[in-house]
Length: 165
Image (cartoon, rainbow, N blue to C red):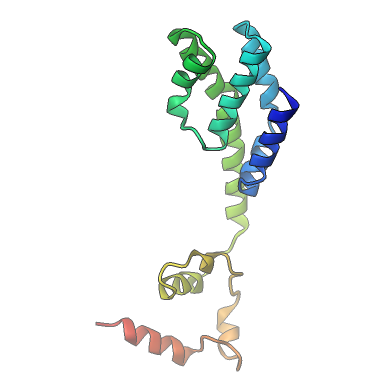
C-alpha cells in the first residue's frame, strides 16, 4: 500500500465512531488483503486498488453489494474472480471486523445504565437524541426530595397531566 493511500485511510478512519475505528485497527486487514491479492497474482497497482475498494466498504462509502462489480471494473478481472475475491474479503476481513465491533458495542451497552428520565427527556425534547448521551440519574427516589432537583414529583405530575387526554 502506498504512503499516500495509508495517509488517506488514516484520515478517514478518524471520522468514524470510536468503536468502529478500534475494530478496524484491531484487525490486520492489510495482510489478509495482500494474501488475497497474491493468490490472484495482482500487480502492485491492482493490490492498491483492492485495498482502496476494501477501505471504501469499511468506511461505509460504498455498499458491500457493489464490491464485486467494482473489483471487476477497477481491477480488470473476470466476473467469476471478482465474486470469489468478494467472498474472501467478506469472510476473512469484513466479518471479523463486524464481529469485533458488535462485541465492543455489546460490552459497552452492558455497562450503560438506561434510565426512564432519558426517555422522558427524549420525548419532551421533540426527538433530541442527546437525551441518551447525558449521564443517567441514579437512585432517583433519593434525589426527588432534594431541593435543587429539576424534576420534582409535582413537576412530574404536571407533565403527566399534560399528556393525559
